[in-house]
Length: 309
Length: 140
Ligand SMILES: [Zn+2]
Image (cartoon, rainbow over all chains, first blue to last red; front, side, top):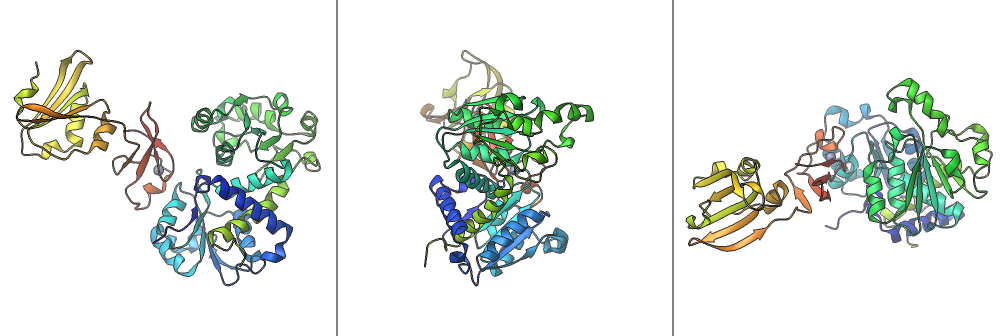
C-alpha cells in the first residue's frame, strides 16, 4: 500500500511542495468562494489530547470553509485515551471514519506514532515541545506575503530561543532558502540550542548572537518576537533583570527599517507593547489569518484535492 | 604475546578500546555460546597502548551495527585453518534500530508501545544519535 502523505515536521515537505502550498493558500485567499465546496462530503477528525483552542479553531475553520465537516475532541478526558486505549488503536479506529486527522498531543513524537497506524493523512498540530509544522507554514506565508520573497532576508528572532519550538522549526526551514542571515537576540540563559546552530554551520548560513535588541533591530528585514516566560528563569530577580531587554516598543521600532515586519506566534503577554499594534509593520494579527488559509491549502493537498477537477 | 594463528577457525575482534571488551562480549551474547571464547583485557598494543581482544572459536553472524556502535575502532578478522582470510573494519552506523533507548521523559516511546525505535546518527564525533520520534539525542 502506498504510504499516506503526512505532515509531522517541515522536513516532510520538499521546497517545491512548500511553494505549491503557499501559492495555493494565496489563491484561496484571493478567491475563497472557488474553494467553498472543494471538501464537500469529507470529514476531518481533530484529536486534541491537550487543549489548544486557537489551533483547533484554525483547523476547524479551515475545513468548514472548504465545505467539509469536523469531528473530534478538545479535552483528552472525554476521549477513549482516558479509558486506556492505546494511541495506535485510537488512530486505527478514527481513520475508519475520517479522511484526514489533525492531532495535538503533549508527548513528543506522538503525531508520528499516530501517523504510523492511521489509514489516512495525519497533520501534526503540535507534539509537546517538538514540532508544530503548520505554524512554520503560516510564518512562511506571512513572510512571503509581506516581503515579496523567501530569500535574501535578515531575520532577527528575539526572546526565548532555547525552548521556543516555533523558532527552531522556522529557522531550520528558512535555512533551505538562499541568502538567509540570522540574528539571535536573547539573554545568555535562553540562547539558541546547539542543534539549530549546527545546522546553520553545516549549511554555511551566517548568524550572530546578541542580547541587545536596540543594536540589532536596524539591520533586520524581519523581527520575530517570542515570549520570555517567567518560569524559565532560575530566580525572579533574574527574570526582572532581563525581561525588559526584550520588550518591543515604538521607540525601538523607530530604529528599524521602514519595511521591516514584526511577527509573533501569539499569544503575547507584554513583549510587544500595545502601541506597536497600530504600526503598519506589525503583521502578527495577519499571521493568524494566513494560518487558516495555509491550513486550507494543506488539507486540500493531503486529500489530493489541490488540483482543479 | 597474542598469537592469532593459534585459532584454527573463528573470529578475532581486535583493537577493542581497553576496558570495553566485557561490554562487547555481553552485547554480542557471547556468554550464551557453547564454543570457546577468549576475552583478553589490557593487552599491550603498539598502536593503542592497551587494548582488549576477543577470540571466538566458531563462525557466527555478527551484528556489525551493534559492533560499530559499541566501538568503531574494532578490527574483525575471520580465521580459517589458522590464517586470517578476511578483515573487516567497522564504521559508526548511520542508523540503528532496537539497540538504543530514548531517554527523553517527554518522548511518546516512554508511554506508548511503539515499534523498535530507529536512531539516526547526528554527530559522528560525539557518537550522538537522534530518536526518530522526538529527535532527542542519545548515545550508548
Ligand atoms: Zn524519543
